[in-house]
Length: 321
Image 1 (spheres, rainbow, N blue to C red):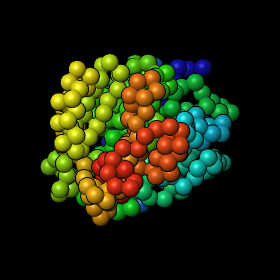
Image 2 (image 1 turned 60 degrees about the horizontal axis):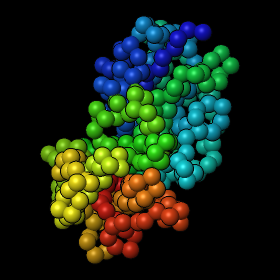
Image 3 (image 1 turned 45 degrees about the vertical axis):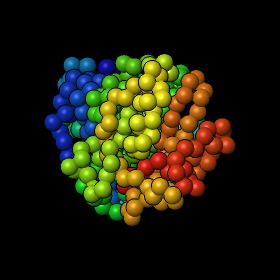
């Protein structure tokens, strides 16, 4: 069988499509593999199928859509059984992939194949959509799928939010979230052992002058001792970590991205914003996870994680709803 490679992009940008390998696309265009949509995503996803030399391949079957646990796709769930943040489908194979267009298609003479971005997940939700190359029997090949981390919002976001993508290390059992396209590219390329995209993502502002009024910067720390990152939008907490644990937690930046703060007493978020919950565990060293799903938060607490934040819901900051 030919050495087939799959490269996926949003149809609004073809500039990164013509690269020689999916790793090259992911390194330079990790930010192209994410999307934020109001209610539903108007644009379909486009995949380009190429061989090892970067030449387009025609007539290759592809499926683009939400990943299921069927024969197509890896059936991605997190360790707690969740397929995304606030998704309504649960463990149901919510697009059974009976191959109606545009989920299933053959690549054209340019190697291009299109698929829908639609899914039944109601807003607000965050989940994965993948592009998969198929063999002649419509089963997945050994070519790794390429993923988009998608956030569907209730209202049209103010400003220009971007997606902070969640990753999970299956060996260290650590979570990591980043809004940095270069870091996404490195982790998506598979060059850092153990890391792959997880089911969640957050809508954040990477640039302050493109953000909603009233945002605050988020401090980001790294611990080489525990190989773990930590985020806080509370500047008092940021300063406290710097002063109390200077040898354990290194401040990487005071503006990793920008978010809204909740009410410090109630934990309530501003209109059109939803709470982000921070969960903490000490397994394999300290590690935090940031989720918008209250059910997932409660499930993790039952599993031994500690909820951190303000108000009865333990809110740490707020993102677009």
